[in-house]
Length: 488
Image 1 (cartoon, rainbow, N blue to C red):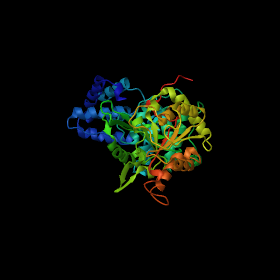
Image 2 (tube, one colour):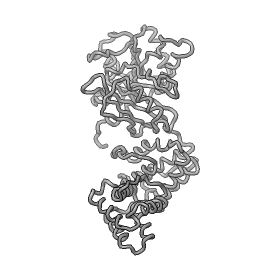
Image 3 (cartoon, rainbow, N blue to C red):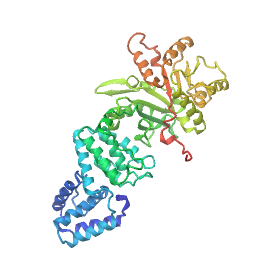
Image 4 (cartoon, rainbow, N blue to C red):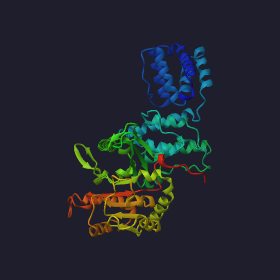
């Protein structure tokens, strides 16, 4: 809301507040701020300044970021300073500059009190960690990511209240609170659902397709999202081919992803484990993810497809381990995401694999040059969505190889041995790996990596220590790489 007022209008508000006797000195402002916070039902993130004008300017900034806060301050001042001309002037100015919020004072106060109860019951702020995912679900892809820093769920609720309803007439705030209730515990969850039901009725939304909040029994029995994904994309730096611009997202199912890291400073591959460790152990939205399962996906350019990303090590409480034995780790092709011409075949093959993941045909290539490249492309174009190769890609060459042909054919699943493998041995090993439901291949590959470090057959020669898995979900192309489609 503050962005909708220019500096001159904000200055008018500052001067109007300073003309009120009780607001012209810091002690008086502190008393009225405390009363305002009681009226709103939550604390305001206000930091005092030594100079009165700067202090009031900071107060105005805070008031503009919280819908209804300026109006609530005026009501308090009117009760305290009856028939005051300076208070009446401030009231007129607020009515001139700030539209009345769509949410009533009592309803807003009740919501913030419920949010306070939720945060008290969750001192680790796991709910705050989930808000980027819930925020994107509520506002959709048309709105930008959060620009101002969010210190609490009160900040998120205030921001969402400012946003207009979508094409279906549903305010994003109602969607956010409805979905937040799914993660809340008793007694807050039922109260949040009841609050949403009342607001939906007041707004006349029950008949326009707005899904009512689930009952308590339904909420407990509703299935959790099937998977959460931490996506790490590495884009080659234009000036230094040995450094990469790294972006990280968190995505729940097929909801829009939330950006966790994005920097204009390119970094070497050696710093990726440091970023991974921070994201996996300290990033609240990852630690507080809605499901225990997490898949780590690396979106890599062609020269890095053979890099052993699953061997990246992180340290937790002094113990260091490879991420590949803790999480399913897969590779995705950055080049294919950027190459829209092959997306139709990629999506078609992914759909075919999803429809027949137990008995899907597999193309096995055990020796380099076993097939002419055009012959291999023709074989892959017919049916197989899975390509298994006993040898690594050409890392130092731009010439097409079998791995590149597989990507261009649209094969969404590819597995290969990074160090080369005896053809007969690889055929036996990969046949066992691909024998069951291929949609569970990332988790079975994680189990194979664990077997390489423990139990019978463990050792440096185990396939689990040398296997790269490309598992490229064509239905979850990260937003930066999705081309706009024509409307249906």
